[in-house]
Image 1 (cartoon, one colour):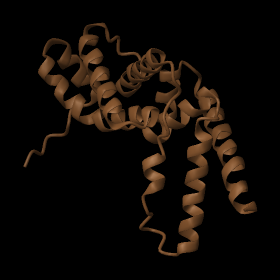
Image 2 (tube, one colour; image 1 turned 180 degrees about the horizontal axis):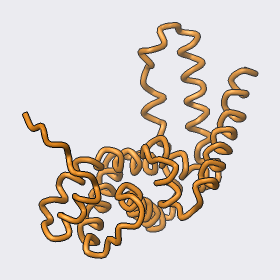
Image 3 (cartoon, one colour; image 1 turned 90 degrees about the vertical axis):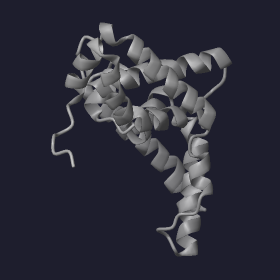
Length: 187
């Protein structure tokens, strides 16, 4: 059993700048969150896999230019964000429905059928409403909840102040709550 702690991201980046094999640990650390983020944008597994691969290829190619400002997660998600934007520019379409597969699956934690129906109704509404949010609000929710980034990391990715990111998250959630929870309580 290995009792040595995993090296931090900054150490791994420095090592990977001279030895690309060291990049493997960073890849394993971030591949799942980057994939989730790309999937949240596309809603299509194969497209999310391609965008994830493109993100890590671009990161590997850009290692020498990494300046160490901000976190490695913010750097990687910044690359993923650009890859997703490039993808949609090339298709000239809007993002897919990321909650599609989630809302179709039963929720094992809600055995009560009435509560399950309410839960599914809210998820359906979020699915319908998410693409109606402003691009910044949708992006901040995808980075926070699908990408798992901190407020600081989101601020770095979106080139905004942390306070602006907090406001965006708060307004996006309030918008979803207003549109979905209020809608389901009326119906």
